[in-house]
Image: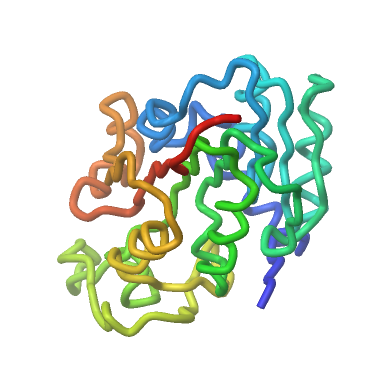
Length: 247
């Protein structure tokens, strides 16, 4: 299933109003952590899967990447990305990330932000990425944490007065499709255990570099609801490296 909720006008308008949509990387609580996991981008070729507005693509170009390709299934997302991008080293492709088909050993870095949990065929995609990466190239991605996706509805449990009691974790080992409420709309996501997220990588040949459960930075804790994000992990960030020698 290749869901494209973002071209729905109502959903896209709600997404555009989010702080991370308006502020870009400055509005993404996990960026401080994710950015530290990225390799030196000078002279490198970068592929961003599920690039959205193109924030990471532009960052890569500004950091010295020689070529940046952003891929997204949403036309509306890419229209915004094109408006905001000035660098000729960045280009965008309207395409489901599962359908990417680049030459072997093309990229030095494949990056993806909060997109892989929308993909049913995770293992197949990782195999493609492994092939497209050059030896010693990196895959760096963020996804929703398995604790966050397990129960499916992705909301807290509240008491009778509306106070948060706890976050539910249920059906953790039952992997597969979940129906979640995001911005008031139903979206399909795919739950995987931590073992599956990481095990697929190592079984295909990647070496795990770093695995991080990011917390909101101190500078964002005064924002509404942000302190509650310290009560359970919402995201998982993984850096993995393809072994081998350059030729």
